[in-house]
Length: 383
Image 1 (tube, helix red, strand yellow):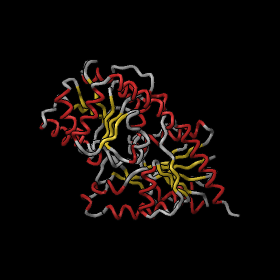
Image 2 (cartoon, one colour):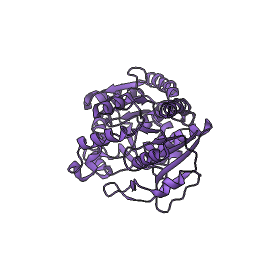
Image 3 (cartoon, one colour):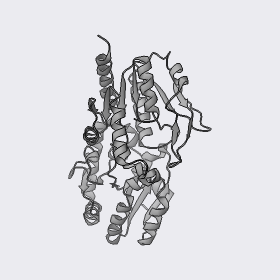
Image 4 (cartoon, helix red, strand yellow):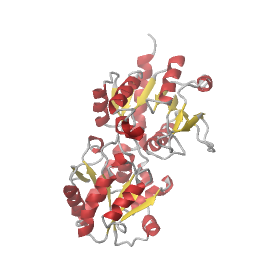
C-alpha cells in the first residue's frame, strides 16, 4: 500500500509522538508498504530520506519548540495527486490533520486518525487556559475525529475518553509499537560515567519532557522520603522542558541537590544505554496516551513504579513487573523502597518486564494497523 502520514510534529523534533511515528514508519516499510509523510518545515533542517513533504510553518508562540503549519496547502494537494495513495493517516486532529481531511476529500481517500495527545490536559500552555478551555479542546477533538473514517486509540483509556468527548466514529485500540531488540543486551556504564556515579549507587530513572503535566514535582517529593532511607539512591530525570528551573529549585529546597540529577537532553541513539544503567524506572504522569518511555523501560528489563492511571495499565502488571500506586507520597516511596531492598524481586520483575515488552513489538502493532487500513479501504469503496 501507499500510505500518507500527516503530523504536526516530526524529526528533528524529539517527543513520544515523533518516536512512535518513526518506529511505525520503519515497521510498515519492512512489511513492504510505502510511506509518505507531510510535516511542518523546520528552519535549516533538510530531510535525508525521500517521501517527506514539508509545509511552511511558524514557531508556536506558547511552546517555542513546536511548529505550527498551515492547514491549507495547494502545493500538498498537487504533490500528493501522483503518489497513488491508498489511505491517509492523520497523527493529529488539528493543524495538518485538517489538511489530511482536505486531501482525503479531494482524492476520495479513506482517512484514519490516531489520537496521540490528551489536548485538554495541555490548554494551560496557551495563556494559562484562559482562552482555550479543556471543554473546548474536547469538543474540537471530537469534531476532528468524527470527520475521519476510523479512529485509532493507543490505549483503552483514550478510547473511553474519546467516547466521552462525543466521538461517533469507530474506535480501534492499537498500541504504540517499539523496536524491542534495540533496548536489550546494552552495556552498563554510559549514564553512570556521564554523571560520575559509582556502580553501587542506585539509579531511579525517569524520562520525559519537563512539563507541568508530567507530575515530576510529586516524583521529587516522594523521592525525598526514599533518600532518607537509601543514602545510595539517586533520582535521574532525563529530558528538558519549561519546568526544569522550577524542578531544580524544588530539589535544592528539599536538600536533594546532589541526589536529584538533571542530565538534560539525551540523543535517542544513546537512550538504550541510559536505560541499561538504571535499577528501576519511576513514572508519575497521569496525562499520557500510551507512554513510549514505559515501553522502553519494559524492553530494557526494568521494574516499574508508576502512579495508577488507565494509560499505563497495559505496561505495568502490579506484583509482576512493578507497582501501580495512588497519588500518595508515602505509598509511592514505600513501593520504591521495597524494590530497592530486594534485589531478587527487582530481577524477577525486570524479567517480567522484558517478557511483557514482546506484546508491543513494532511489527505486531504495524500488522494490526495494516489490517485496519485494509478494512477501512474496503468499507469506504463505492458499491
